[in-house]
Amino acid sequence: MKRAHDLTRALCLLIAAPQRRGAGAMSNKTGAGWLINRYEHLKQEPSDINEHLEILHKLAMECDSITEFGVRSGVSTTALLASFPVRYTGYDLKPLPEIKTIQEMARLSGVDAEFVVEDTGSAMIAQTDMLFIDSDHTCDHFLKELRQAPMVERYIVVHDTTTFPELAETCYAWLDTQLGYHWRMNFRFHNNNGLMVLARIGNQLKGSNQ
Ligand SMILES: C[S@@+](CC[C@H](N)C(=O)[O-])C[C@H]1O[C@@H](n2cnc3c(N)ncnc32)[C@H](O)[C@@H]1O
Image (cartoon, rainbow, N blue to C red; front, side, top):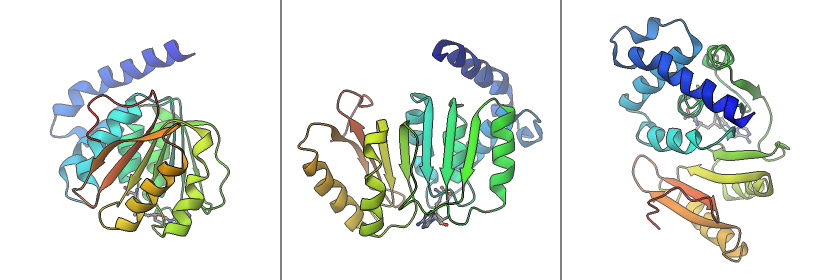
């Protein structure tokens, strides 16, 4: 299953490759090409998260299953989906209309993509390689989201940790409760509202800055 998917993922990237360089790239009708072109475009377009799209994509490339809390119009979602995981699930209380097209393009490219309208404080997620958190940035809510950690195999990534320093403090305090055994800080970025990458011990991305 994993090897077959790796092949599909490689083919998606290969087919979309010429479109990545082309100016009229968005006209590409394949789901994979559309996602990659949108990802390349969003990386360049200033937003509250564009500087982190590359690291999100890189982490996602290591994962078969991805869960996202807080999708809005799907900027981070696009970076995650452009890695062509086997399964993606995004949660949001009020996803914007753009999400419908993104889901369609992801499904066309072979990703089992699902969007769920639900409070991430009480959602019950399936086992996942990566959980990306970018929803309600209050500490109480964030702690509820962190209760999903046992369902996460590799990475928990948190956005807005500079803009909301209390989120970063909550992360460090939570890591202390893990007794340094299950999870560790893998990367911390301070730019573009901040991003923290927590990795399960033994699953860190190389080049940790912590
Ligand atoms: C900062 S935006 C997410 C941006 C998105 N990651 C992107 O890159 O475009 C936060 C999103 O979280 C959603 N949200 C806020 N509180 C939530 C909750 N309790 N449960 C689910 N979604 C929530 C909002 O509806 C909003 O779309």
